[in-house]
Amino acid sequence: MAESVAFSKTADRSIIYREITPQIEALIADESDVIANLANVAAVLKEAFGFFWVGFYLKKNDQLVLGPFQGPLACTRIDFDKGVCGHAYSTASTVIVSNVDEFPGHIACSSAAKSEIVVPIMDDDGVFGVLDVDSDRLDDFSDADRTGLENIVGVIERVIRSHTNSDKIE
Image 1: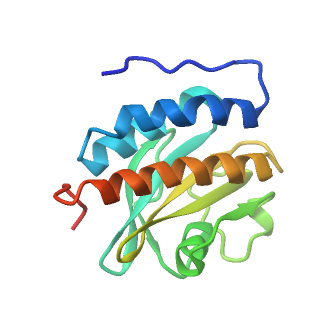
Image 2: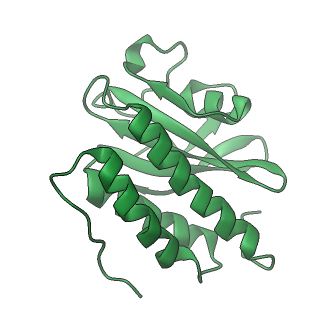
């Protein structure tokens, strides 16, 4: 079991994503518990980038429900048609918001959050949940974050699919 993650603390984000992605894969590949894996991914992303908030919302019935996260308290439930997370869920596409105050229907879980990126996570049944990352700085996310986080979500998706008898969310 890994106890730390190694990355270039002064490198730009694209380099850090390239460094941590294989480490995340090694960390979660042999673990079938989805919640445990998502908790470790959130911790790695928080440690590597110091984002304000990093976490997951998981599909349960007709809402996205708070899953593992790192950061201050968060909204517990989000409707599929509400906020940035709901938009990413309903469109099954990554959403980058440079200023959350300008996003129609933004849900302000914390007034300190200024920008956001949300990446949908797919399983064999469609959108399983979303990875939500908030920054306390405006316009903090770029295509490097989109690519890096989509690659990490790809690792999560492969691990979910590889564990046919996994302890999936119900």
